[in-house]
Image (cartoon, rainbow, N blue to C red; front, top):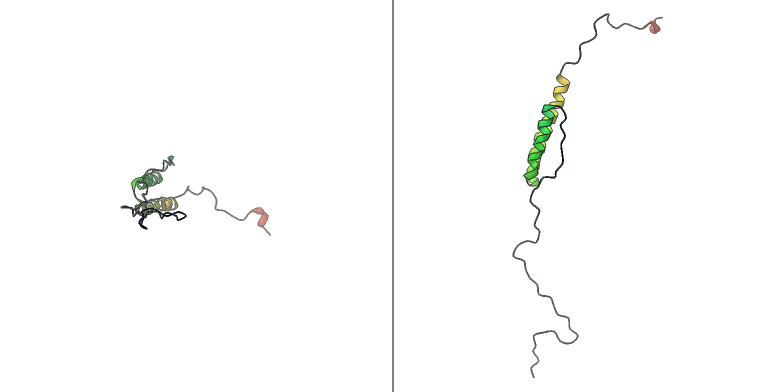
Length: 104
């Protein structure tokens, strides 16, 4: 009788075979829209900037920064334009004076 045998002997544990996968097991999901609704704000500049966010839906995450920076710039410009617009005209009449309570 021969001492060599293919399987484990009595009381011995079989070692699992080590298989090396051909490709990595990590398979990230493809870019897809999140489905977040963006209701209109009523300001055309702001709405256009927010609509640009949809461009990031089909990009890998490393492409999002360009879209976000563009949107941020558009929103910043819209806010700056609000500060630059003239406000309502000052009321006509006498210039503001001290009230009768301040008279000594």
